[in-house]
Length: 394
Image (cartoon, helix red, strand yellow):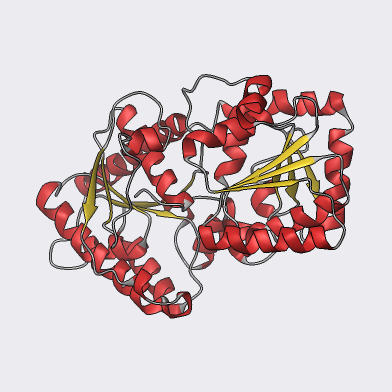
């Protein structure tokens, strides 16, 4: 931390919400080499636009890290070494400093490091964001699940696959991602003025990562058919931004209008400004792989809820699970033409657009990180109470 990857934002928001809910929380993350730096005078919580309130303790855990010293195609082995050494060192840190505390791990490797041995940690939970495809990692997840107090699935698709692996449904709680509440709302006029955007033009925005399965290339194609609409694309790792920039330039050379504004990665504090400036947001996920169609619980969806921003989204189980036709317009996944039609139709119906915005704001009440943290803590209390009663009966 900090990082251009969304998961670093997610884990800090999750940890902060637990702290605000009254559960003293420590966040352990890998100490990368080279260590990422924050802007001068800015702390981690300000950088990530965390709401006011109590802060979790954040500790960087040493690990073996040479990932960035080798080309991308050769990073598989160093990435696995980094994960395993972090898991071991984080587990040792927990055993020394919080032997009886609750542990919520995003990775099976870290959970296993606490569950193996002569004295397994008594209160390990696992938050599962995707079910691994490889045999070794699936075996690790099954072993970790058997010793864990419970599992939190980030989506119904994750829950279904966990059950198919033999994990009892009663041990799984589904909790989607959320958004950081507590910020002052920003008007559309003020947001557009801040970003130098036309005050009256229709503006469509995409915020988030630029990996291929996110489907942002569909946005480039759809933009070519809607020259009067301004498209603003925000986010992405540097190498993905460069790849998309070349794609946009190719589109322009083929005759498309210059109606795409590619911003690249911006500080999390700025994302809300882009959402506030837009008439419509996009979630154009591809139909493959499974992380896109079944597992994902996109932060951008919940951030749009807070902003009251209607969405055009791919018609996939992962998104149907979160949204209905009252909040979003669905288009056939992988279909750039269908995306363009959905955007045009939604922008052209101002009455429906306003209704969708109101519905998004209403839905947001259920999806703040604070509401999520309270539900998870109540579920953990139930799991531990049940285990205690069972021991008493035995």
